[in-house]
Amino acid sequence: MSDEHKEYDGITYKADDKMPAVFKLLLAGLLIWGVCFMGYYLFSGWSSEGEFAQKKAQQEKLIAEQQKAPQPQAAAGGHKEGKFADYIAEGKKEYAARCAACHGADAKGGIGPDLTRKELKYGRTEQALTESIANGRPGGMPGFKNDLSHEKLEGVVQYILSLNK
Image (cartoon, rainbow, N blue to C red; front, top):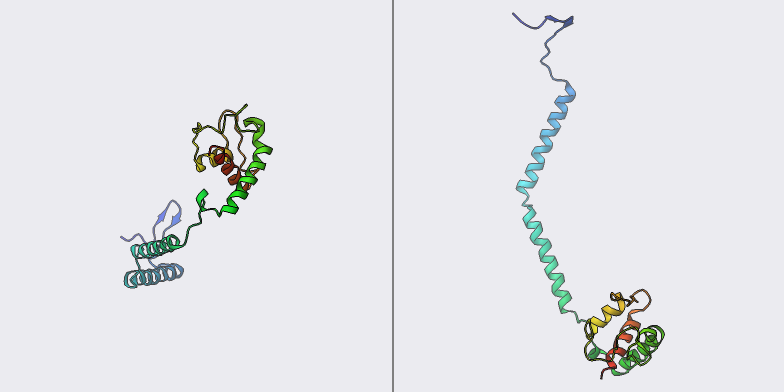
């Protein structure tokens, strides 16, 4: 007995073994695309490892070029003598305007600590002073990174460093 023309709950069942033409077309397109895609990536020599190695080589080349380029001198010894004196003079003006109220006109202390000592709480290096002035310190030292340009900030640091010489 065949199920071709049976009736189930009032619905006539008609067996149709043919797939719609749209589905056949989509299946054929998908198979063709899959074969082309696999062929390209399997036989073209492309690999993610090769791409990674290529990008890494480019980065290493860029880093090597940057290391060969001369680095600007940021230390106190890198300034020309005339420019260094200008930094200290500019720093003295900025110190009088912004720092003297707390650290005293002679930097011997007041509300803030004595800046003429050999040792300071957060260090007496150029980097430590720059960080203290730019970002401030807990306990009352405000940060001035938004108020001072790089040159003025460096001038204040050089002026403070010159106080202990």
